[in-house]
Image 1: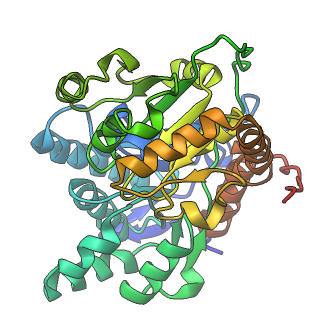
Image 2: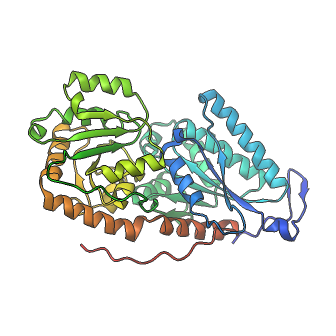
Image 3: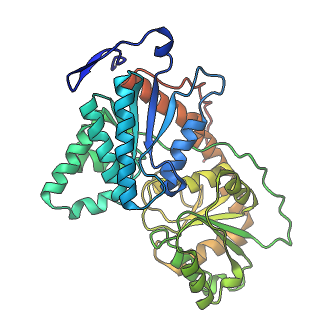
Length: 396
């Protein structure tokens, strides 16, 4: 286990040891795009920080914004600011470690800079990989870029991944030693809003949560509403998320399904809880995913899930037991899945019941935070003290 960094040498400078009270103020940075633009990574970090006991000695987990709210060029400037904060925290001896949340594209570049800076500063790191497409794009990289990516993944003390697919990728392709790879399934808070009572006269409410994009299957979903399988099935679809709202609204008009669709825009935590409490079905017809928080949040609320079996999803959910699987890129399949769950009440009730039980057994925020705390204690010598999570059995 790494020892607390009370005294060491960085760039030839001696870092003085901490005295009594200052030692208690040591903390862990959560490096992440600290803005709703960060999507699921931002929510994961926010949930972890929220999980800290209010009566503790102080915030052990603190956000380190690596994105900012500006454009791409401004985000690189924000990384420079983040590195400056890391250097100051290292030299005053207060930072115990950095938990780096990484996705792909430009975020990969930003977080790689943070990892490299931490290596130079002598700060231990944990890399938390959220990328859903990196295993695809990596195959197209030229050899020098592949070597650079492998070097980046050699820097942290531990690499946290969302499931078996990601674990195989980082061990086989990125050559991370298996003993440094830990599978940690995300967790989400318990519902704060009770489910709405359903009557026979209600029009079923279908909810999509996520960035409105082709990768998330939004065009396929809108086309599904015009498929014959849903022609006699009443429903109202709400799409909660940012993205090209105007473009997809125009597409809904062209498909003549606009009267069934509401574009809500981005929803904060409280607003999303209300939308989930009012929903009958969550639909997520993505082409690529890790393990989406939207699905875990739906399970927590007892909302039936219709989704594509991509990424880590089929490793934690089972078709017609916890969710209804549909084919990515196939509007007819999406329509059939929605029609099945909306019209077969026994199936929908089973999905709701089993999904809720699965959330309590595997996806609670308490369990997730406790697992992350154990990793932090092992790698940083410091963690948020978490009460033990209860053990819950899931019925098949």
